[in-house]
Length: 202
Image (cartoon, rainbow, N blue to C red; front, top):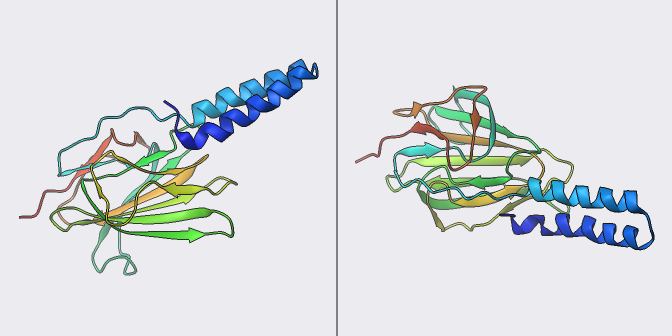
């Protein structure tokens, strides 16, 4: 399945190919078809089943774990946080997914003049445990887009955003009581890889 954001990237090279074929430029026409096929691969949106266990923390992005550590960040919270960073490369799936079951309390955008190149979600579980998801575009196109709005409820593995042609994702949550199942260097898949567990507070 192809995400709708990829349609212009697929159709534009095909139109170019049609024009080149019409004027007998066969090699250029072939290159346009090849580019269209590559873009279809880049914007693939594979079906992934949502995970309904409210205690599990699911990878929000496809890619490689580049950092997994506890840090102090008073700008976000007055207590230690787990910070997990995932680097999504150009050939990884671009769709980002909710790491937990909860409600989106806040979405912040950092924009350039024409595009959003960074945004963050604050997602709160039913027991009040917060999860911060910060996504930064790493491509020259600097184009990130959220599918949801503040106030929307989400389940773990539900698509929430897209960052085109590579990005870095940071997932932060309280360190106390959290169990982490991954480490730096691991390959993860959005909506599928269980990266940890945080017991529900009663």
